Structure formats: structure tokens, C-alpha cells
Amino acid sequence: MEKTDLFQNCIESELPPGLKLRLDKGEVTDITFSPDGTRLAAGGNGRIWIYDTDSGAQFAMLSGYTERVRAVAFAPDNSLLASGSEDNTLRLWDTATARETLTLAGDSNLVQALASSSPDGVPLPGWDPRTERLLASATEAPGRIRSLAFSPEGTTLASGSADGKIRFWEVETGRSLSSFSAHDGLVLALAFSPHGKVLASGGSDTLVRLWDVDSERLLSILRGHTDSVDTVAFSRDGELLVSGGRDRHIQLWDVSTDDLLSTLSIHRVPIWELAFSADGHKLVCANRDGTLHLWN
Image (tube, rainbow, N blue to C red; front, side, top):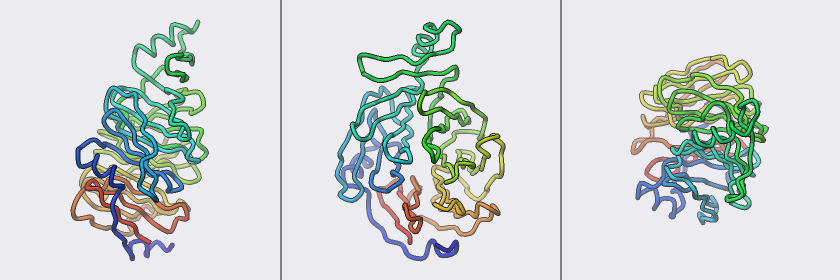
């Protein structure tokens, strides 16, 4: 795929009918595609719905939340789904069994309970027999999560919150690794580069920022949007970054130079989700009215 040829051919379609119906009712707050493009997850009013992208059929519904689910993300191998909710929890789900397997962080009561079981006051993992899931918390609460992204190897989970911070979590244990201030406002979008060395973030401050994952150092700021940036995605070779959001424009960036290569306007509604196909030759754009655009 040439950098200048990305937006030449476009096919328009729609999200699965069941998901579009929920969208029309205002039940959906976030959607995400699986890395292989076979699944689509949508979070909303206390639930997560998972759809097959080919047939459009819903094959799983995940529940147990007391507040809206604001962020969902698939692991690189599609085996796990991460979700963040306004109930201040960060959870992992087994996509094969649709069972919750790990609560990475929870409310203050869970933090205190786990801390009290440790001799040095550091929270320890525990087993909840009522739900048959592993509870794990950290010295730092996740905040009101608005975005999630797995690292390419699937061992680290990044979360972006309403307090403007990005936090890194160890997937296996739920341990809090680090956190840093990233945006003036909500962190609404996250994406790791294919090699895992760079993290892209988008915020309500209209900016896209690129971060060195190891040092958490700011590499560059990409300015081009005029409203909140709700989605960012790297191409499969890591050379391109796309961003989109409430200003109804898709921006195509050259990662090596930070140059804005192209801008595409979606006239009707804000852009919700952007994703490259597994082969890297197609770009999918999901919009808030339930329409899909596919470029090749």
C-alpha cells in the first residue's frame, strides 16, 4: 500500500443490524474490531456485545457492570477482551467462554480489602468464589477509563482515563506498572505501534501524541484536528498512523516525519473507530450513525 493511495477506493456499508439498533437507542458508548477483523465488540449500558463481522450475528453478551462500559479492546491473539467502566473497574474476559477472568483494578473497597491481606500493605491477588474470577488491584486506581490498548505481545495493557493520564498494567497479574500525564482532558484513544516501542494517544484536547513506551517520553505532537480525537490506529508496517473523531475528518500521518499526508472528510457524523485490515491493505472506518467505510 502506497502512502498516497490509501483513500482512492471506498465501499460503504453498515454495522451489524443488532448493533445498529442498539446504537440508535443510545445504548452503545464504544466499539472495537478484533485484530484479525473477525469480531466486533461494543460496550454500553452495563454490557458488552460481541458480533461476528461476516454474518453480523451476535454470539456473546458480557454483563456484570453497574455503570456504562466506556472502553473495549481485544488482545492481539483475540483470546482476551479488556473493558473499562464508569464503575471504576478494569476487567479481562475470555472471548472463547465469555467469562470474566480477571479484575485488574476495582473500587476503593476492593483495594482496601486486598491491601489488608498483605503484611506490607501492598495489594495481593485473591480469588472471588462467587464469580470464579481472580481479583487483582494496585496501589493506583485506574480512574474513569475512556480508552484501552494491548501491547503487540499481549503482556501489557495501556489505559487512558478522564484525568488525562495513561496507565500501564501487567496483564498476567494485574499489577500497576506506571502512569504519566498525557493530555489536558480525557484520553480517548490509544494504539501501540506494531513493534511496541511507540504508543499513540488521542484526547479531548484535539491533539494526537506519540510516546516512547520504555521511557514514557513525549516524541511528538500531531496537530490537525479541531475537536476531540476518538480513535487512532497504526498501519501494519508501523509507517502510517490514522486518527479521527468529532471533527469528522480522518487524518493520515507519516510516523517517521510527523507529516500530515492526507485528510478525508466524513460529512455526516463523527468518526468512532478506525482499523487497518490484517493484511494492511484496507482501512475500516466506523461512524456514529452506524455506517462503515472501507478503503483499499
